[in-house]
Length: 325
Image (tube, rainbow, N blue to C red; front, side):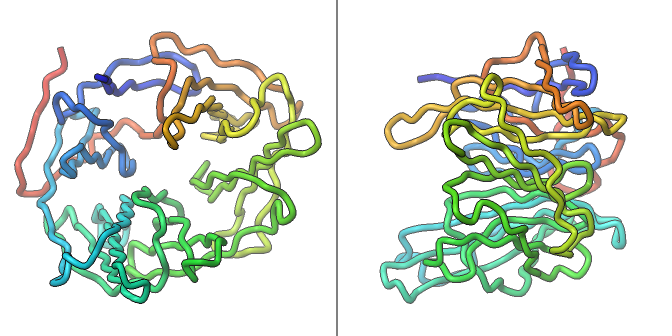
């Protein structure tokens, strides 16, 4: 089956489709993934694991140099987890891309981990100190908040409890951040990302015959006591049944509403697929919901935020300049 993947630029506050963007990767048989977005730059990865930096505003892009996994016994490994993250360090004035790889062997006691950082300023990768946690999923992309990249990981691999870890882009050190006490006695699914500069955790769970969506915000970075519950929402007319996802995306410009993406999912051959997506605004003061109609976008999509900017891509790698039609 052939799928086409396109990029659309949408002003989320007005709901107007600005333009369809021509990405620099050409035709792709598999989905193009966005590793991260920062100051108008997007980090992309294609189906051949090539990584690009792209500024849609200037139409400039750069292919990052490849880097090998530094291990001598790849033959004994049968499973791999790869986590990425992309962000900006204002102290060194440098854009950095982080790659964490963990290889699992047939022997349950065997585990190899490595972490590398790509610097746009030097246009090269370098290995940093290994990490002391477990990556269970095949591939995850981190989110940027407070000049740090974040992922959900496991401390003990069999604990079943995930933990939030942050990577400081200045010190290049990892640290764990505590989550709020939420849904401890309920079966739930969650999403965690940055919203409005804060770490935002969304828990969706069933309560009697309704589905409830709780949205938490960490008001002071790294302080567990600063988590507050911003929204608790349970309108059956707008919230679909499990396993659909209801995820907050952004505050409105005046801060009185939150934009949500609602994804309707189905299961096929053991995998979950998006059937369709829609946007709604949630009014924080009136606790009301209004539909958002955006013409010209497909029925199913992923959402990433970027700002239009003239940030240059300065490395010495191959440059690609795609002209818009």
